[in-house]
Length: 243
Image 1 (tube, rainbow, N blue to C red):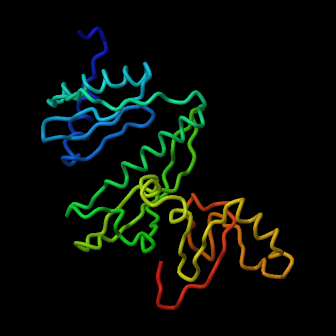
Image 2 (tube, one colour):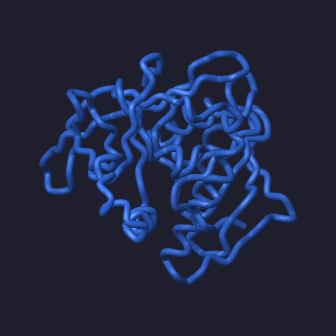
Image 3 (spheres, helix red, strand yellow):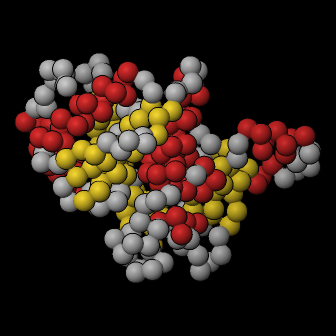
């Protein structure tokens, strides 16, 4: 028996009708910081496939169930539901949730059904969209650069536009933390990598010129925000290679 008095607003139902309707059958929905994951089973049903063993996750699930039902979907709850007790350490919790999202990203597919993870992600392109004024908590605005990542489907040839955060989940740190300008490739280096270079005498042997720290612009070209302030190795691109 349900005892929750909470009910979704009309605005939330409008959002749900749009969001749930756009999801493809068999796709996974894992709302941020909710502790629950759902699979779209059919055009009119979802199933709970994962839930943290935590009161907040249970509350989120009850609210999501009410929202889905208000949008015309049924919620299935399997008997053998996977539950995981979250670690007490907040950093460990965040890492666990991030790893779960990465696992979900490996199931994403093009409209043709080809898995996105099976594409040559090194050929993905970063594209600047526009700069917008974003509201802050103190009532002012700050300029925010909006970008997208374009992946070419190896099966149907379609260009797939992805949010950079989603691409990061799909590709991982190594592929995400690199950028091709029109003339150079920049590959971000971790602190551990820089320590290894220093211990090996790289900076004492006069090859420090291969390293650079990226700002917001490089040679008149916009740099993706996630590369700002990052120490990178720069190499020339072949003349025929484009960003």
